[in-house]
Image 1 (cartoon, helix red, strand yellow):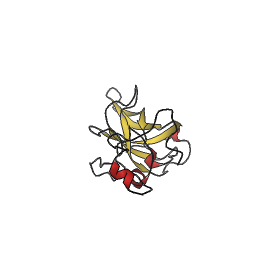
Image 2 (tube, helix red, strand yellow):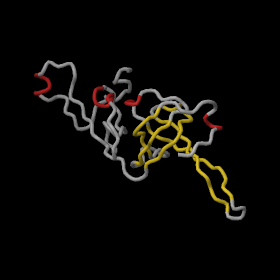
Image 3 (cartoon, rainbow, N blue to C red):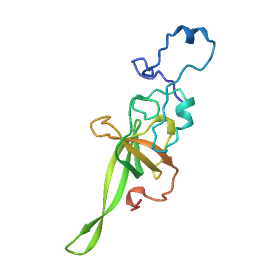
Image 4 (cartoon, rainbow, N blue to C red):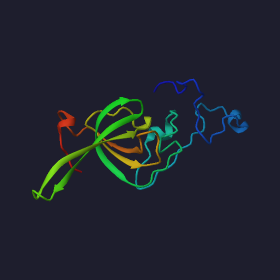
Length: 159
């Protein structure tokens, strides 16, 4: 993992007082770390508990609550920092022809460093949260390793 202090502003977890006399008296290498369970049956990744990353938008270590919709999709892009694009495929009924047509939506999703590097083709489960940026409204809760072989954008997979 890269150094925690990678930005100009000092990176620290909200709600942890680093200048506590109790903490300074102890000679431990590990400091105090804030983490929480998001609920809904999702396990907290081990890296979220034992790691040293700082992410205020992480559902496990940050100030974000998961509520609302739970989505599942395929990762199609990992080019942004801590944000991925997932593709959600669905069928739309056309009454005139009494048939279904294939459609898809690309959804930008925040991914915590607790999940490590994800690859295109991985399947992720996301939970809705407050708006994290102009376009991001979802947070990754679980990663299922690569199940799609070939061009991810050309595949049509229903969940």
